[in-house]
Image (tube, rainbow, N blue to C red; front, side, top):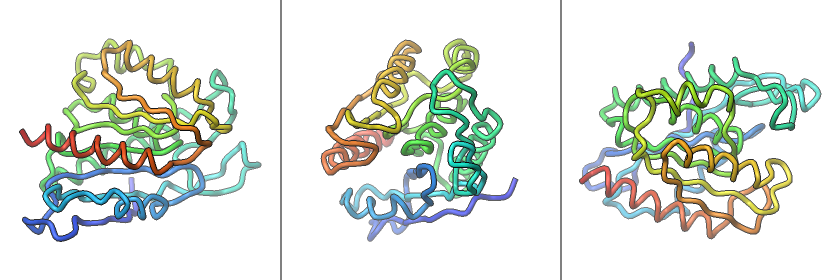
Length: 233
């Protein structure tokens, strides 16, 4: 597997000069790693929180729902029906990419419990799939306007798996109440699945479509500050 291309932003004016934590943030369908790059400045994190932001580019692949057009996608979308067929191979391949990025951060001196895995839409699905199954404790999981893929494997690989993610994992989920692409019911059902597995979920709803809003960025900032304060105790 080739190492994924990434957009990276190192902490600005960090007191130590180096990152002490990482946010791995996956973009949505058809976008790329630059999509959420501007949000780092908008978060306006204090200098004491020395975070590296890593935004990987998804592979380019044909997307069935878009007439086979090739674009950046974490997996193929065959149907919008939640009970329809899913691209399990693509999902697991992208999960492997994200897992390799978690390991790369460890090799760069960032322990697993100082890594937040995040994503929007398709990226959120991969973030959720990967983080919940990761055997080492992570700092947190942030899922924006997304859903839990491969629900049929959830019980065996997460719910009943003693080696899956710690139930103490901080989870942040947000969704737009007017989302026409991924209706909020999909996010709510995903939240319920996590809660049923023993995870505590910080849930936010916003009057928006398939997007990120200013109020959401404020909530993300607060959550990140709490997560990295807790993981450094």
